[in-house]
Image (cartoon, rainbow, N blue to C red; front, side):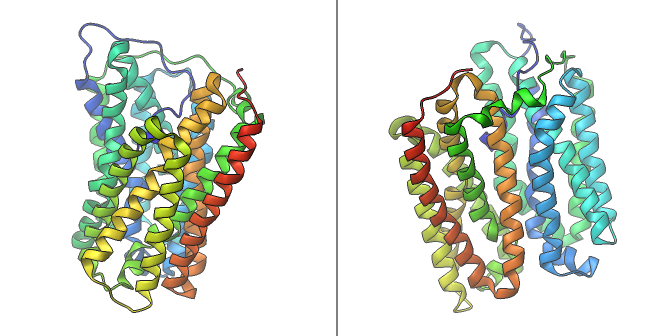
Length: 408
């Protein structure tokens, strides 16, 4: 989604020229599509993965947790370690690592091997996504940078709406291993395209990891970041276990992929609408509406799950609302962070991106722990997380009102 494109610190030197157009960014977008599909496709494959590895669905869900937390931790670290590498070399290497991680995951016969594969894939994803955005911006004149970033991150957006359900269908038809192999093959194809078609780009100036984290010393930033973790944890308490939680509503195996499509479309709509609404009405009203919608969507889905079935149209509408509420958070949170630390905008947005994946990991862990207590409990836990987000938002507002932005 749009939350990922500013994860880096200073990007590469501008390499824009008359012959450089947005066509190059389409190649980069194919890579972000692979990353986005890889990050979330496992949600539709967990039961089959668990059966093949002879573990519980909750245990298999650890692969989602590990991927998300590894991504959160590795993104700033890899950005620091690889800052001086030429961008094309770095992007190709990152895609090769992503492909290797997926091939290892697909070949896994035990859960520990799968976990290692997901860590490797997360490393490739964490190295690729922020640098793809930076490279895309450097390939066009300044007036076209916004559009270039939109194209690159459009790959993640399309993955949310289409890549995940298509991966789920591939898993249903050919098996979960085939779905992961398909992601690996896509990453390899994009790596070849990047190597052959992309122009050479220099590396960036090195920024020490300690310098990247200085924003964490600002109270106004610290008042905002925990909300990202809580809000994403709330929506992903259920998402990673979409097959059993939607199955409890009477949604069939193939219909789960339709629901994931509706979730993705809702996520796209929520993300776009949030950007416009934040500019017009401010971040806090958008977040209040988003978290309230999440409480309602997850609460009603939980209530319906107690009956064991629900009208498919109603479930679809609620799932779409859930997706919109989940991803409307990011533009508003970015807006609040940049207002809190305007001179450190790339760094605070990078921290927010790590907070997003940390929240996904924690939410998946909580959902896996609650799975044995029943699906209604999982929905209730997600709704409770959204209520907690509203409370933290209120508390954070009180702190930020008392704390002026720090320019540094």
